[in-house]
Image: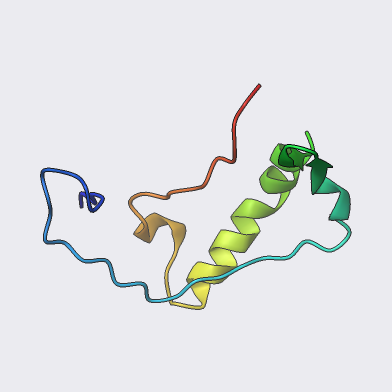
Length: 88
């Protein structure tokens, strides 16, 4: 499937239908993400522990979500993960 934005010249007729979504809250992770308030605006702060937290939890979180819909990881051809913000 190819998905294009509204301003793309090669429009597709494919429509996406979301069947289910899931969010996960990791308790005791308050220090992992935050904001710094500056005179010029907000600056988001990310802990270097984020990759470790994801590595520790992602497999269990994804497989438990898929199981609720009678699916396994092998049933999914591609995954898309949001990689986060700017890297310095």
